[in-house]
Length: 315
Image 1 (cartoon, rainbow, N blue to C red):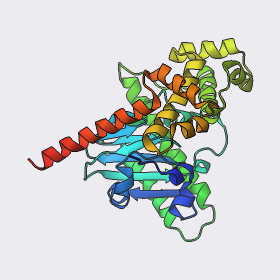
Image 2: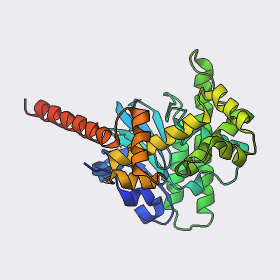
Image 3: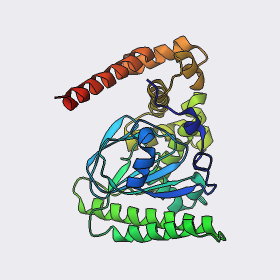
């Protein structure tokens, strides 16, 4: 069973949608109607998305984890993440899709903090709840973005859209901080120098995991010592750098096994393993299953799920 679109995996929003702008806003009901066959199966894309569920309840899957959907939940989907909508038919809200050029104009502290707080951060939840009675602030930016997209005279269009998406994220971060400060269970996500270094390491792993670099090589790229890097990841995440690198390789292996038709040998090659047999041993060491056993187990579970759904339908 394959639900992985290789062209979508490599493409950009401009090439997929054909509009040339690299930025799109759709009502969620319209989006799900137009793309139901694709987005209700696990899929992946090379651009960013913000999903604002204004109403409706269910589950949304991101990288093999399911998260609750509820009123005014926002999901932040980074490049190359696997996601899947459930079958709930009546979600209302918005889907904002945009290329990376809208995410960061320059590496200043605010842009860096926003990007790392919301997108492609495997150590943060991909969802935020902004609650009710506050969402009108986000509606204002949605309205401005939709007006700008529809504007035929394009002078400064991309700059304004970049400003609006940045302002939207700042408002969400403010609200997130307010809720976390009021909670006994969460501490606000603050990007200090240590966390900034950690995020740079996470970003480097995202770029270079298939090269199988060692901890010392990542440390060199960050201009810090291997001991400093190890202390950083252990103190903030309780994990060694090598473990984080291995987890990223395994995540990509799982994506390719479940959502592509690639053979094990092809997957090994994509992930930088010269010897497919070594890749099989590496995978088994981490999951106690061979790659093919992992794929077949997933397909078996999917078949059982389909069978149960059919039994419910016809009883």
